[in-house]
Amino acid sequence: MSVVVVGAGLAGTACAAELVAAGVPVRVLDRADHVGGRMATRTVDGRAVDTGAAYFTVRDPEFAEVVARWRTAGLARPWTVELRVLGGDVPAARSPGPMRWSAPCGLRSLVEHLARGLPVELGHDVQHVGPGPTVDGEAADTVVLAMPDPQAARILDPVLQAHAAAAGRSWRPVVAVVAGFAERTWPELSAAFVNDHPVVSMVADDGARRGDAAPVLVAHSTAEVARRHEDDPEGAIPDVLKAVSELLGLTAEPVWTRAYRWRFAAPEAGRDVPFLLGGDGVALAGDGWGSSRIETAWRSGTLLGRELARRHTAP
Ligand SMILES: Cc1cc2nc3c(=O)[nH]c(=O)nc-3n(C[C@H](O)[C@H](O)[C@H](O)COP(=O)(O)OP(=O)(O)OC[C@H]3O[C@@H](n4cnc5c(N)ncnc54)[C@H](O)[C@@H]3O)c2cc1C
View 1: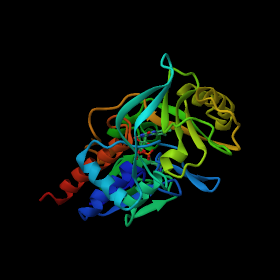
View 2: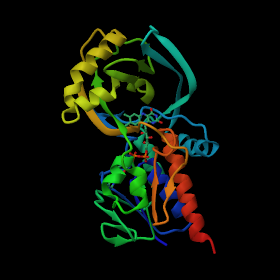
View 3: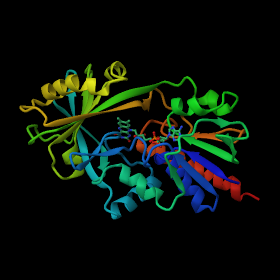
């Protein structure tokens, strides 16, 4: 039995890790030149910035063990239990909740850690998954697509069961605007949800979550703004900055800015099963299988990997 996993975000990487541990031959393909997917970290102005997911939470005891290993390796750290709430009717409330974890070197480093030793082939943009199953014409026993539904639907042959499951599911876009300042002119923040705002949905203090106190903010646009700027994410920068400046009472302009577009940031609706494993040998996994978050992606990939390993080792 050989498995091809398409997508080296956390879900695909976790799936492959289970398969390798069980001795199942696997290849992992990703079109990007790095692993991590939406746990995205870019180097901007000489330091790492999280431009995709903002932080993660931990509920599942098994995921907690993975996080403990990341922590021991110096890659993850508990960040904050309290986020602010801005906008709406509440002037500046605080929202207590579960511990939010961050990554000093960026969230991508966590996926890189999990991917160590796995047979990952980067820069491999899969065009077609067909019956058989096949990946760009090459046969496999099972093909796993660990990515947002619209990305999976684009490459799945319509005769496959997985195509019907992925097609037509709607995902929200986001533009992430990163802004570097000469100094911090905002009150203690960690991060803030922004309620009922036409432009911004969240703003995070990247220096606080990274632990280096750099004067860098990352703001996530609303889906409406991201749709308006689908072809020119930089065009969203002025409106997002104006909104952040008003919300936080900034007294200075940023020294530099960047914009990153996520066409498929999060699904409009989740599912209540952790993955799809079709009778035709094609499986779907990722954060679309549950409520969209990092832990869901890990769980989806891990459970699918275990199920495939169980089938492999069954007499
Ligand atoms: C702006 C933003 C904010 C977020 N905030 C949070 C947060 O605060 N907390 C939280 O828990 N989660 C957050 N999330 C969600 C979190 O990032 C995801 O749940 C998680 O990273 C999904 O992992 P995944 O492996 O399912 O998918 P992805 O990370 O999307 O991985 C899919 C991979 O498939 C690859 N791929 C796609 N098509 C192909 C192809 N044809 N051929 C080869 N490779 C392909 C991609 O390159 C990618 O690497 C956020 C996401 C975004 C975008």
